[in-house]
Length: 129
Image 1 (cartoon, helix red, strand yellow):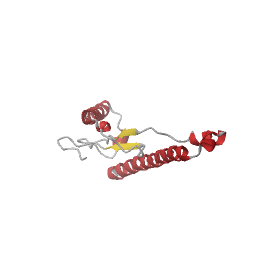
Image 2 (tube, helix red, strand yellow; image 1 turned 30 degrees about the vertical axis):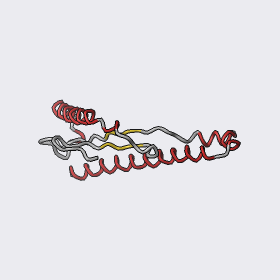
Image 3 (tube, rainbow, N blue to C red; image 1 turned 45 degrees about the vertical axis):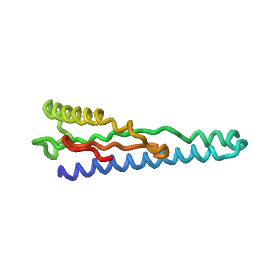
Image 4 (cartoon, helix red, strand yellow; image 1 turned 30 degrees about the horizontal axis):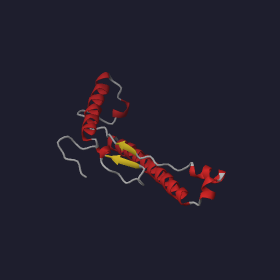
């Protein structure tokens, strides 16, 4: 049952992120297409309205995955005991510190990506690219 919950939560997060990446990529395409319009079309009210759907930002998503903690079972998603909360907080804090120390968002990114995903690295392992 615990593994089923892990898969459900992971696939939900993955699908939401994939959808947001797709939407943001399309917004970058709109931005580029609007630049290619002739001045008259680009400056028309309709051209301005359509171009307003474009975007040039790049978002960096630092994905933090809740690690398996010693002694947890299939009730981990409803464990609101002080000890459970404290253990989750410590694990999340450690993962966040590792991500901040790596600062992968400082590396160059493709300007058409729109959303760049940065996955965690397990303690003691080296990040890939």
